[in-house]
Image (cartoon, rainbow, N blue to C red; front, side):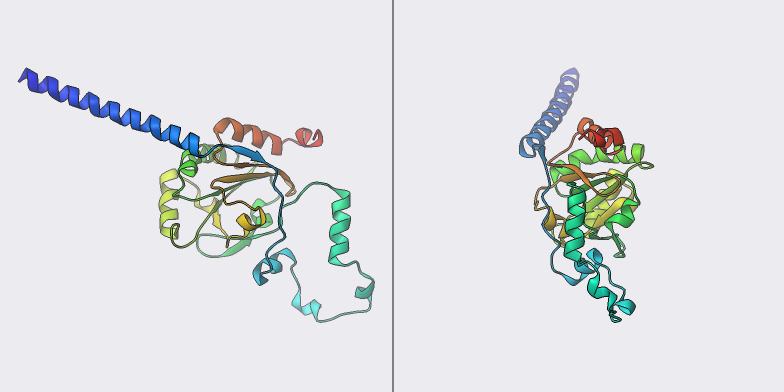
Length: 236
C-alpha cells in the first residue's frame, strides 16, 4: 500500500513538473517568435473607398449643391493640408471609421474624446496578443480616466469572428466598450500585418510612436507617461 502511495506521489510530481516545463517553453516560444520592435509609423493615404473618404472629408449634402462665387477663392483641400504640414512636422492619425461589436459605426476622434490614445491592434488567436493583454487590461483599469484605450480587433469573419472575439474579451476581463473592429483600414494605412501592433497618440491625435510585437508592462507604462506628459512632448 505504501509503495502504491509513493508511486502515486511520484506520478503527481512528474505531472506538475511537465506542466511547469511546458509553461516555460511556451513563454520562451512567445518571446522568440514575437520580438518587440520600435518603429515610426509612415502612413499611407486613406483607401479610396466611399465610406473611408466620407469620414476623412465629411460633406454637408445640403450645402454641397449650393456653389457660390466665394468658393472659387477658397483654398483647396490640398492647399490646406500643405499649410497644416508646414505648421507642424508631427504625423497625425486620420479619422478612420471604427465599428462597435453591435455593428454601429463611430470614428477614431469620437472614441478618443480629446485624450491621449493607446491603440492595440490584435487578434484573439495570436499568442503574443494573448500574452500581453493582461498588462493592457491592467493599464486600462489604471489610466482609463486619463487615457483612451482602443483595442482594434483584426476581424475577418473566418479565423476571427465575433464569437471568438467575445470569448476572448470575457476570458481577458476586457471592457467591451473599448473593443472595436474596422475593415482593414488601420493595417492598410499603417502598412503593418504584425499582430500585435500598438500605436501611441497624444491628445490631439499626433503619433508619439509605435511597437510591432508584444509590449511588456514596463514599456507600456513608459509610453503612457510619454503621451500624458506635455513636458516630455515639448522636449522632443
